Amino acid sequence: MTRAAPKPAKHEEFFKFHREGMVEALLQGPNFLRSRIFKQIGRDDENNPNPLSGPYLFIYEWDCEEMPWEELVTVGAKKEWRNNIEDGTIHEVMNYHPTRLSKKNKDEEESIERRKSVVQ
Image 1 (cartoon, one colour):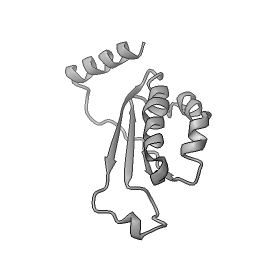
Image 2 (cartoon, rainbow, N blue to C red):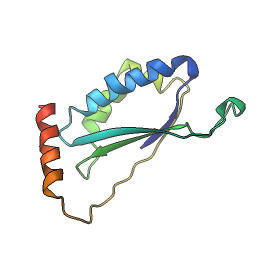
Image 3 (tube, one colour):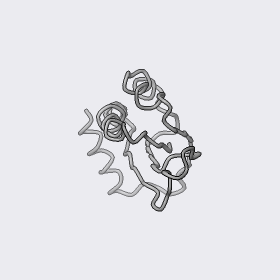
Image 4 (tube, helix red, strand yellow):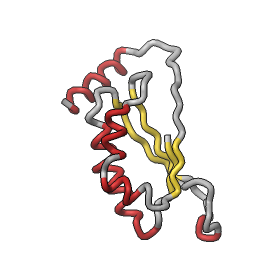
């Protein structure tokens, strides 16, 4: 999970990199399930030039217990990563490892298998 505040001048470039660079690379991993983006409503970043975190919340989900380091390193090595993340963009990363307490149902298993067949 990350929070980000792309610079206004780079807003489109940031989200293009997210779609075409980041998520595309993560999809190469066999356990990547999905990426979701949420935007916090009601923020006033224009009057707060140094917010502590960005208005966008990015959630990445994998069907595994370990971080997919190979895919993450691939993303981090991209020139676009340096241009869009390491350029002073407010970027906060959090990592959670939730444990599943319930069994997967048949529909969920089929959905995972369909997604895997699209990636291959």
